[in-house]
Amino acid sequence: MAKFKGEILKFLECDDEFKVSPNRVKTAKYCSKECADVHRHDTTRVNKIEKKCLRCGKIFYDHPCHAKRRKFCSYYCVNKDYEERCGGRGDSHFYNRTLWRKLRKEVLVRDGYNCTKCGYHAERYLQVHHINLRRIGGDDEVGNLVTLCNSCHKKIHWTM
Image 1 (cartoon, rainbow, N blue to C red):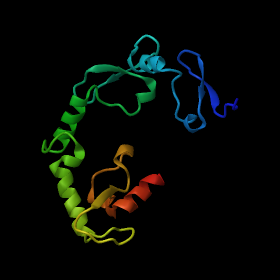
Image 2 (image 1 turned 30 degrees about the vertical axis):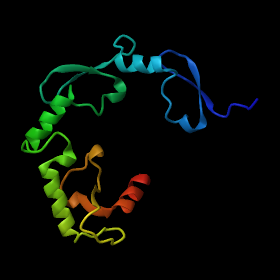
Image 3 (image 1 turned 120 degrees about the vertical axis):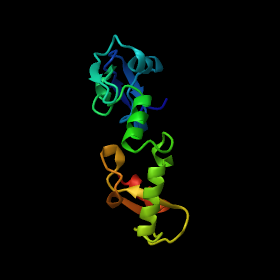
Image 4 (image 1 turned 90 degrees about the vertical axis):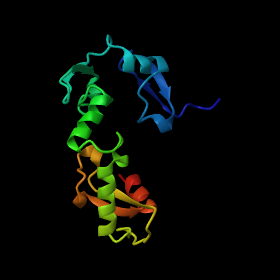
């Protein structure tokens, strides 16, 4: 019989130990699907943090692990907040909005429809990349955007 090569981790919610394969050691969080569901839906096991929605002011409760990044009580409030800040044009997904399409076109024209890394030239199939990513607070200003081809864009995100 083969020897188990993974690790045995201890789940903090229920104190159960569970085996994890070597490729999941850094990402495994739960001992079972049941414990994952408890973490996501149960209000009695975890002391949740009380927060106030930045848009509507409603009080909501959130897990401590999500507390730093969650600012709104629902997707409705997230989308309404963005529409208020950006003039209310377009649909709810950022990259389908009129504002993004105008910014993208402006950056492509500025860079001459050339990839700023390798120089690939095309009218289509170019992507606009945020230098400082939106998820870590980067803004949607033209100075924070560059034109990249698909392969250079993938390389940048693989190295992050």
